[in-house]
Length: 327
Ligand code: MF3
Ligand code: CO
Ligand code: CO
Image (cartoon, rainbow, N blue to C red; front, side):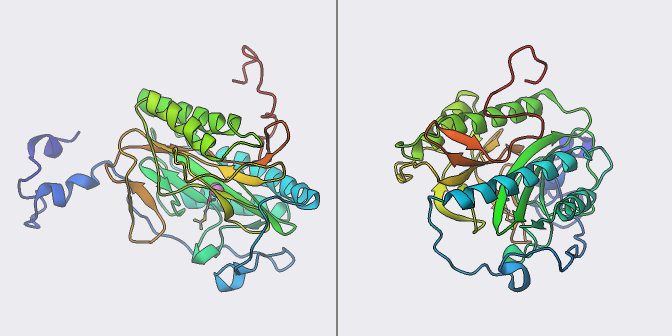
């Protein structure tokens, strides 16, 4: 904490001379992520097939079935592999001093090399090719000119549109030396995602997923974000069913083989309550404490779940053995 923060009390007039209370003025800004400058959208060459909203910004309303045909499943599997590759490549570029817009450039080139369209680009007007959510940003951080700083944690969320379908995944990356508390949050958030996946079973309601995630988060004293949930995906980016990451009996959809949806819990060190930045996209924790997220796209099978966005070189259906150095 700086000297100023240590000396001034919450209701004192702010040091900046605004006449407002310190707590309503500059206190909230110390150590917080601030919106940076967002550059123009990156162009996509005309030979890459685009989703319906790419030009208008508005996805066409369609009623996609929750249970996909085998042919759609095959296509989502390929889109999912591409998304996972783009995610790994982009994550490898994370380092102190690298801006989130530089990460967007890395991801954008990687999509195009694979013949994929970055699904987020112009989705309801979203201006960039990935989401980058740093520290207390819960989700939908827009890549900008803010350089990553030593000690930051960042979620990179990649969605690839290939051959008429979307594959969606995200992961956390550590920037330089990260404090113990944040490392723990990141580790447990991955466990929450994986416990959610382990709860996927045909014949069971999707509320089992949120129950598994919430139970693990609570056991660590963490919050589960309620404002953003997992979603069905396929020819549509966001479709039925809804997958809350907390328990609610309203999540009554019964899982069936052939369903495809995401599990993408956002887990917080403190309160799960969010507030929105003025850009209309970015959600941050209301208390300014850190948040983490991991996401996979899943296929419901007779046996449970198949991960359609597996980390390259790390098959997630069979977890690596203990002591293999991979877990
Ligand atoms: N990939 C995000 C998800 O997991 C959605 C991003 S939509 C955007 O659902 F428009 F914000 F980019
Ligand atoms: Co998603
Ligand atoms: Co996503």
